Image (cartoon, rainbow, N blue to C red; front, side, top):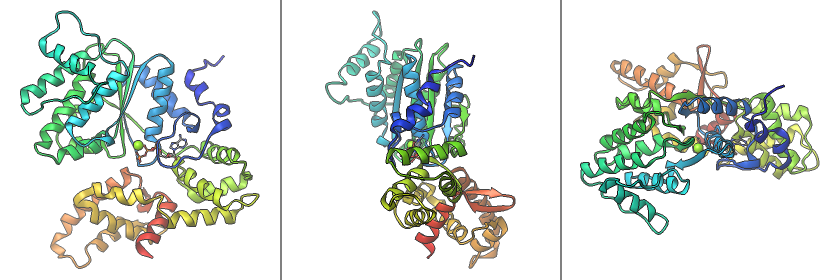
Length: 404
Ligand SMILES: Nc1ncnc2c1ncn2[C@@H]1O[C@H](COP(=O)(O)OP(=O)(O)OP(=O)(O)O)[C@@H](O)[C@H]1O
Ligand SMILES: [Mg+2]
């Protein structure tokens, strides 16, 4: 007989299709989380085998939702679990406060043993006061900073099954990097996190997730070694079955009639079936609904999405490309006009328009870098020798917003 895992029960279609609701934007939890059974099973297996994971995947694909679901599963198995969203902070003090408060709330700190050092006792006393008010840290002197991190490391219970999900680490580190002595602070934090994972026989497992690639970031700063122990974990669109199931369940929850052929029509039109796209098209269908969903309703909902703000995040987040932002925008604008895609050489020629021809090598190198970033972030993909938008919806939105 097939062994029944807790995650099977938690993600069972029956449980979910009963009460899912339409959520757009924030991570989905509980009954609103749909599918991903295969990924959950794989992640749980890795965590059980003491792996710490790196989930780096395109934006809006469902990373934070998956992290929260894994926490739900592991909590139900009796593990200590913590979810830390670093998007909430931009400073080192803020980072420490988030760590300390969430570890305290979830009982990750040890009780202080007798004979503990003065430093450890003092940090422990400060942690105990967390619930009363904010804690003050002096990070001005390097030695004080090192002592503080060392003491915190010693206070973590390493002998209990624990799962810590850290969201948007790269986003936080890239902001920190721009502050005074930023590179040094970033290196310190990455090394500290690494040292926590290296504690002998530790039962604490980590998951780092974010849409900005931690690998690219650390290798650009020669800090690749600080994350080499993490196991890469991929996340892509839903399977066809899951995508159809999500749309059907959302319709059922609002008592909206939709035939299977219309579900298929929608999925073919979206082409890249990430849960966010299904959720936003559904929200437009609700507005359109008059008894039964037709192909025309789907086309109208799709066209509305192209002219509204749901996809703005893809444009806004290009600011993270900093010096490469304007080239990335040029490439995306050009590709949005070409449904079939374009060859790399055509894109290069376009970028070289009105440029001094001696700069071709420089542009060629930059182009490779930006194309890779756009691919990693899910904007485009390479199909045979052509670069195309990964999602027709995103392409049509881009055309509508920046070209037409
Ligand atoms: N498993 C799921 N079931 C149902 N909807 C989902 C699921 N995963 C993601 N979504 C949809 O996608 C949206 C974004 O999800 P989430 O915040 O988890 O993605 P993300 O990859 O962390 O995004 P970002 O790159 O912005 O951090 C949710 O608000 C919801 O509409
Ligand atoms: Mg997220």
